[in-house]
Amino acid sequence: MTRDYIRERQQRTGWLLVTPALLLLLLVYAFPILRAFWLSFFTENLSTSLEPVFSGLDNYGRMAQDGRFWQSMRNTAVFTVFTLIFELLLGLIIALSLDQAFRGRGWVRTIAILPWALPTALIALAWRWIFNTEFGVWNDLLLRLQIISNPVNWLGTPDWAMVAVIGADVWKTTSFVAILLLAGLQSISQDLYEAHAIDGASPWQSFRQITLPLIAPQIVIAMLFRFAQAFGIFDLIQVMTGGGPGGATEMVSIYIYAAVMRYLDFGYGAALVTVTFLVLIAVVGITWLYLSRLRAKTE
Amino acid sequence: MTTAPQTTAPPQTSDRGIPWMRVLLWAAIAFTVIFSLAPVLWQVLTSVKTNDAITADAVVYFPGLDQLTADHYLDLFRRNRFYIYMFNSALVSIVSTVLCLALGSPAAYALARLRIPGEQVILAIVLVVTLFPYILLFLGLLEVVRAFGLANNYLALIIPYTAINLPLTILVMRSFFQQLPKDLEDSARVDGYNTVQMLWRIVLPMTLPALVTTGILAFIFAWNEYLFALTFMTREEMKTIPVAAAQLGGTTLFEVPYGPLAAATVVGTLPLVLLVLFFQRRIVQGLTSGSVKG
Image (cartoon, rainbow over all chains, first blue to last red; front, side, top):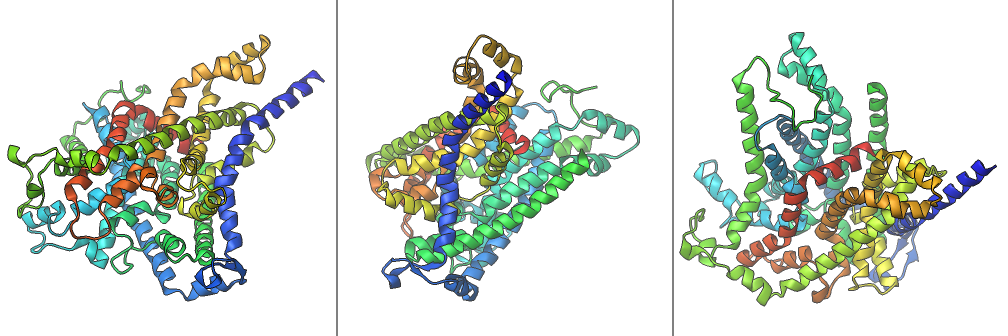
């Protein structure tokens, strides 16, 4: 009797403690997504005097025909795939070296997480300056090393602009990947390596047969986080190139922002948000399944 | 043998003493340091160079004394009233961080200890929500901001910043509460404390280190946010640092004030550099427990 009573009271207190946080999450996360979904069935732009007019699937039909949308999706995919690959490789190298013992490791770790902590918009300014055609230090270094013979207009040439924004994002977020992977590495018992070495395994074999399988969950989680952030990248691109030149670095987020804020096309913007959300959720869902299977295997 | 944590562990290089492993390690360390620092240092160097040195034909790597100046920094505060943006950023970040801790830690405690029905569902939602990019939220939030007339009001940033930091706060604090010895709370209950009293008098004081860790992360995310600040704050005196700095350059590629831009970057990143210098260990700890253990 009393036990039930205490439990009931505990649960009531529990709900009381959780409710404010949940309400705020609903307001800031659930409402905007549901609202975008609802609004995506309406036309609300300058032609309707910014009044919502029900138009069924019109926005989605328009999207299917919209070359700019597909281009932005392609750009986003390219950006996401390449940043993830480089971040994983570099992050692994940094994590592996930070996992070793050496003098000054605390300092190196501090330096390594610095890029992650700095504001992306300001970092984008820094990179825009580095990639400046005329006075930029990147061109100067490449010219001195005789890798190029003439200054390259990095942010003004479509393919190079994409390379530049990928480079800047890799710089900014590799440390995040490294931190997560380092946590995984540090949870591996040293005994495993010693036993493996006694069996005559080379460091490379140890890496392939012990390290990689054991940090696989961390790799997947880090990549999941990075995927979501890269897929929705906004500030870096907006400040560095604004999506240019000629839409060459226009990501889906930049297009959404332009549709809403510049063209005041709220219905279409909402449809863009909805589709982006669905793509994101699909990838996250698949990764989630994979991750739980991976965990089931290692446990 | 060495199960001890990294700080006391002996050098882990191969016992067979292959020197190239050591060489490789130092190469990787050198790469890490240069890779992470070079762009920041270049910005610092640019910010103290005179305009002539910045736009010299040959890039100046080691400016002489006559090529150094503090003008770009003075400009920021005299001409661009940068202290206003700093104040806005600080206010919005600090208030949202405090709010986030105040709302998030009780929720985290409930999710760690009070076994409420639907706990797993709430946790799953919190986890998934950390993955949503802000661009998915800004259209709906824009309508909320308009409906309540919050444009150019600090609340237009404080509310979303509190919310975007809640998932991380809940995850980090929950994993902390799970590690707290339960005996303490049990004996508090025997002493006749109810849940809220116990939280306030016993759990909270012990929780301070975890609150600091979470608070630092929340502050960083709030200080760095760009999209909402760009959209909801249009009046000059309400802007935050990232937006104000980005607009300093204008959109044209010509006549860009490189020096003040670099100085603005340095000023806007300095608080975060200090945070990283002092709290590096906590940041790492918070990030890993927020995303891995959760």
